Length: 249
Image 1 (cartoon, rainbow, N blue to C red):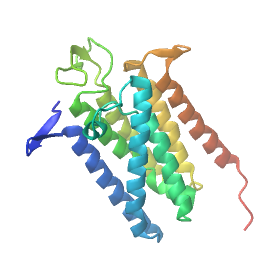
Image 2 (cartoon, rainbow, N blue to C red):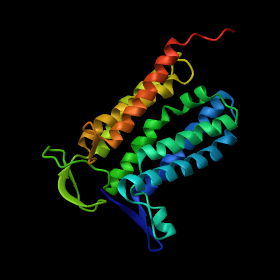
Image 3 (cartoon, one colour):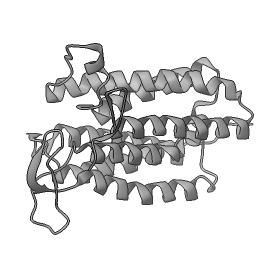
């Protein structure tokens, strides 16, 4: 775990910030390739990526402030720190921004969303790597042999805890492989993204049992309830597409 990678002119460059920047580059590269493959204008990609990143960051920061009591920075530099971000807040505002941008550019929503689906687990795995290097968002105390300490984490802990960041990185691998195989299965437009929602929701629901969240209702944390909602959205949408009658030619 290395929160600080190096210093530039006396300013610390944090590992998670570098990882998140690389993730943005990966998203841009993948989307440009998808645009060229489908005959869409690749020049529309960069503005869309920038808008989505800004919206996702603001959503993650706002939701993180609501559930963790962080946010309220006393300086512009504090606002840009990557601590206390919420996955579901960023997912909500980022997804709405993507859909709005695709609609504005008059691109097919289902087909475009399916093109973006395979890169999502890659990006999420990179985000979790950033959390791991920064030593935040770890899990509960454990006596298991792979438990880890984060003495320089956010917050620091000398207990051995579940490295839930690594759990999620590993779980992104089968999700990524599944999406790669399913994209060649002739699915209806939008089906691949809905399957991604189902899988990501199920993954987050399971990992939450080892995280630090407190139950809010029926023994489940707020993140688990949001994961259930994401799973149901994917399941309902995928079921609808499976039984929908094709439109006449």
